[in-house]
Image (cartoon, rainbow, N blue to C red; front, side, top):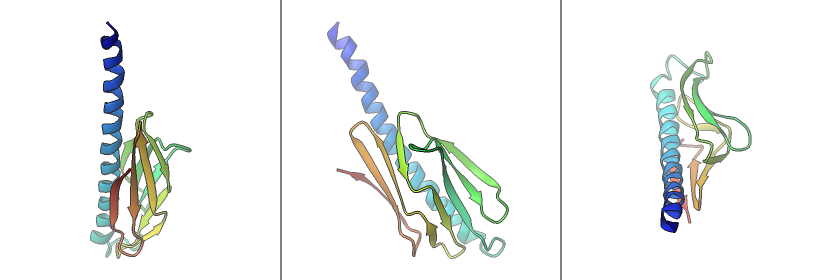
Length: 130
């Protein structure tokens, strides 16, 4: 009976940790997508695109926006059990370089991930913090 009570708690911790890993990878992919939008649409949009985090403290979601007209192209939510902190606005120029913030942290349980964006190239690195 004791094992039946402990097992669900253990499994939920593992699920949260996997969710944090998935979220970190998804944010990194969406940052790369935002950069690609800025590069691809450079001729029509000299202002570029941005990924903006929503909420305060631990973020609750984010949106990808066209900086020229303010149109939101995509939104994503962040589960309450995942802590996501760091920079708020990641803006890409038509040349693919980044202005604004350069880092985010995603965590759940004992797993933490760092997302780093290199300003000159706009390249994104997502790695687990040990």
